[in-house]
Length: 569
Image: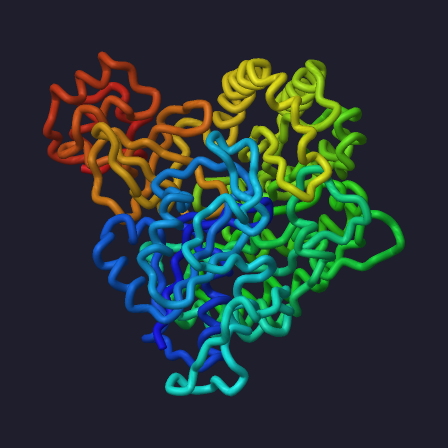
């Protein structure tokens, strides 16, 4: 039996699977198939971008496969450097081509975003599935149950009629097996070995009343994975060559194995998170990146002592440049109450201060150890013109206080069926122009000065991977959570790592040059980007090329002393 897994990419509030990220879903799927008797060589993985690059070859795989599985779903809008999620037309084309059993699932079961990434529609009846079945709960559990119970060898693997299979959620025990069992799939990722493996600690939300727009409650109450299972999965991924990891698939890492004290916020469990991080480091001793993603600011504000212990653990075991993404959503108390949001602006501010107190120190890769990120959502119930000013004032308070934010995410709500905001997101349309004007004001007046503070001119950023070329500029990023986009004004080899000197700032990206810059062979464009150098001084350096050695450079260039550490001869 041959199975084909097509990764259409996912982007959820608590899970990212757009390259260079590899979400857990394809890996769990591969593990489930292995447990049902398929060998590694009979399980094929295709990212949708790979399919686009070679339609005939991918089409042949789809035609020959006994089982075709499509993973898809974007429940938050995103912008991506070099990847594009699967389209509805591509899904329909794949299923028209395939001849075997066809299944689709993932976050797409909740609906799909419309053009512009703001609204959402139901899935069933909106896509021509050409005989495919939509898994209405967990895709990996549905595919596992597709196999008859006596299927324990490749030769005996048989499939049920998909219409007779019950839709259900998988259990933590199942993914405890399927995660390590499907780890081999990382080798088939188009970015391997430079892909980020998204790790799940738990999913779902234990709150009695949920945020109006969030899809995480559709997964049920918080379902914590055993610590040993997560470590085992990392160990298996590491044995297959994975070196980049993010503990990103959970709504709040600080609440992992949290203790219910009867209140609305679980009490953090620092000992559990210390065991998790220590175990990951022991099982992947030469990893290149270990980052996190989501944290609930109310947890840090309500339990500062426990959260301080967790921050110290993270900094001890992680790699620098980490981001603790806070779902603030709004600084307007009227919006907070109308949408059952979690934290007040005062509580979020305290959480930002706590992370800065320990995480703002600069790490070995040139970035601060760990900084908070802030998410704002607009178009929520109760939003008014005042909301935009309150959000702006909050960000200005953070900036004026000297605190650091790694990134500010501003988006309009996507209202999915089943959420309390569905059909009530008229504010997103009503305030569209106001939203765009406010967003531009934040970018110019908050993002730009904040970015200059986080990575001042002259900062050296280590291990930047060159990813794409555009108009003579190479764009690259460090692998990690919310990596900075760096434009280098020269055509450099792709998929190569270099160190970069920061030379300029945009609102959400920076300009840089290779570090150290080989002054005798560098292009004039790169020389003119040397930090603190005016155009006339740069032209004098260019006119003086070549330099016999460093002493010659220092003697003949009046700015030589301040440029000395950025160049090589």
